[in-house]
Image 1 (cartoon, rainbow, N blue to C red):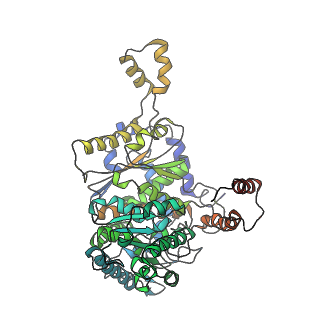
Image 2: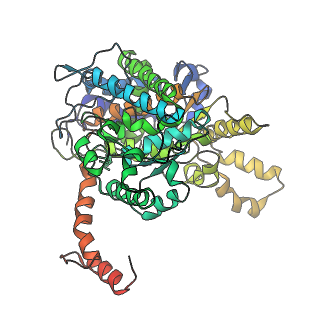
Image 3: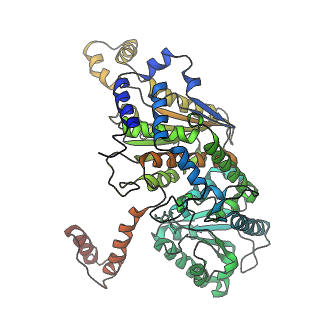
Length: 547
Ligand code: F6P
């Protein structure tokens, strides 16, 4: 048994969970008029209501003990001070430095990283101003109109999510596109929307070795060269990379390579030059407002006591559900169409970070780590998968996110949207007991066997836990706060689980095998495989369809 499972704080929580497992949230609210005040935390413009989680004050105290037992405060200090806490890669994880204001010093290996951070920020500002003001133009002398970001994973998901989330702040003369998939459809369909004279490509790859990104980049380059010639490449391609030499070999002018560093993890990199599409689309001032929002969450995470610390609370509640209440998945439900890509962004942030099975000492773990996370904007999800959350057999905690003010005030749309959001968390919590369902059916005139036959389907168990994050409006500052909140939530959980959230070795095996398989599909080589893979290859080749 691992040290964690046999630790006093863990055992206390296990015992406590069985003691309160029969209690209901409905009764907890009835019995305590102050419950909302006790389990709510407000930061400027952002409220977290966590009162609808199946917890008591004792649960909360025990969870905080678990955090203290894991030396959470020491780990937060280590995160911000540039310690090499990404131990399997011997790297720091200093994404917080990327949003630190000028004037702050952040040391790593005895060197202040801030001069480099500020230099690249200025480089981004100059470039964005040039493109947005039309002083930087394409080869034919026309201003840029389409920005195509070619990148995958952390080099795409954060920027794509932020550009969508902050569309009301975007430049109407610029379209931003994101090409990630090695499926040519992604690139081809994007290029159909672009005119070659006015298209700027950003090749975004920290390593500049990612197969999908490089193939897409080469195909995009060929598309441009065919139409404008080799000389046009320098004016239409820029790169974001920690490997400027490779970007330069691709043909990108070194002045147009925006640097990042190995101490920035891919999925934590949207605050760096990886955020270039965001800065181009929104303008650098708005990008810096987003950094400022994230920085304010960093300060809160560092300074607030554990019991009033939003990322700590979110992280520990996740641990409660995952490790003590048997949750199998976590739903992220933004009641804001602009946040449509937020669940997809969090999928990488949470699952690539904490989807691990070996602890920091290399021991195989005997407790659950990251659960599956998914989501859709409300109200669409309500007509799709909420059924399972309400009446299915699994325990699925939910995060609701909603803005109080809409960017698009139109009739009663926003009031109805918010009404649905609040109604869902209330319905999940209250459920509908058999007696209530029976009374409702009777009121509809049903009785006898007809009523009894329908009754089981009308019962909702309720007692489902949810958090609600309510913010004044989705602006760059607030978005920065929200993203940093989840980044730190992930960190808190990694500390309790004693895992490294900053590596991702699990994505390597598939890559290695794809490298081996490619020449086989091109009929150049054969290798031994399992019977299924061998036959899939054989069948594909036997069909003699051009691939
Ligand atoms: O999927 C693995 C991964 O390394 C991610 O962590 C990263 O965000 C993505 O690939 C892209 O990597 P790069 O920016 O080096 O192309």
